[in-house]
Image 1 (spheres, helix red, strand yellow):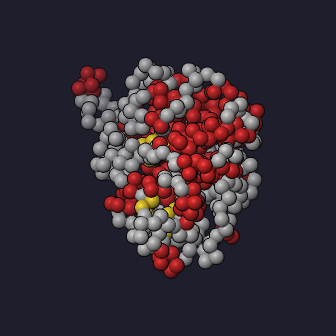
Image 2 (cartoon, rainbow, N blue to C red):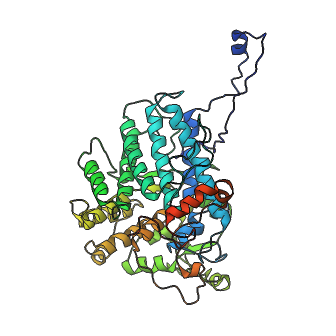
Image 3 (cartoon, rainbow, N blue to C red):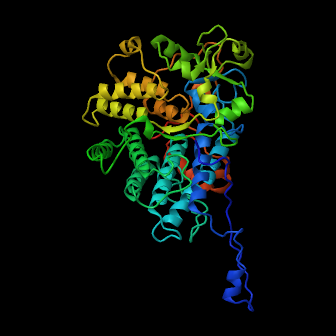
Length: 490
């Protein structure tokens, strides 16, 4: 459960200095207003940064903000729409969605994490290495979302509008440069985080458990190393070798108890975002995609009982993506809705799991980036995904699963990433796996029928940071559209 029962509204507080020649130092101290602080404590910035970034990644309760269930989860054919197909399901993405999420991730998340780092470093106003380390991990995670969604982004000069020498038009860094910096930052964060060190409050992910933050930092570093492995093989192999050879210095996830997730509260408005949209808001726009349901039914995969609710006939059934509204609405009575597990108020909003880590290791072993048993990692990953939902894979499922191959690893990773549309979309764009069936002949798809490869840059950047964003497009190596492939594509 979250340790708070409300969403904190942390505002930027500006100190107002009054110059009164007749005032003495003592008079100024006496008249300091404790209810009007000039410094926001790290714990409040942390709570706000965590909740705003993870909520936005998972769903977001406002229309034209929902980059997961109104874009990535539809692209990945985990979900489909029964109405408003032009809100993601037919590959249409409104300018509002891309603009709002660009602004939201930078302004609501990164600004808070950067403030924590600045104030918590040794030369900051309130030194605390653990606050700085936690914020650096989260800042890196959000940057990874941004670069994986858009491509080149402001990184080295980003979030410096309030610095001693402010930067209002930050340059764009290449994805290759961003990845190198993120991997370096995660290593730094791991070294800063000290078990038994200074206490961290306001942590609504791990409740101040620094060992778990170290595990997340190193597991996330493996995710990023794996993602760039085909482009930077030597560097990625070095990261894998360093972390896997020294579990004491570089701990990683070892059970589902280590999963990085926001554990939501039953008390509004700290409830799960899908609960707010679907249960509190009464929206019935989404069903399970036929692609996912057919795959799970064919495998006898009991996770379908968690991912979906059966229809009135007691059957788990989906309908195709991209159907025009007039056709899609005819499936309302027969298509499964999103499972109650995912729409309850206390449902976790997941960032990274033990299962995902083992899929990463299985792929790395298959690709020769590490020495290890790919099939053992694969089976551990699948079992962890089932265990995450208090399930056990059946003998029939395991028989159909067979021995690990690259295709099987990526297919099962796609299934396990249900709910984490952005991550599933990134992995599909990187590998082209799993191979999806051809679109339904009745589907009407925009973007020339091409499943989106990225989001377009915020139009605000063209107004306020034109020179830099145009340089960013040049680094992209293609047009600022949803068909240009990103750097790490294999």
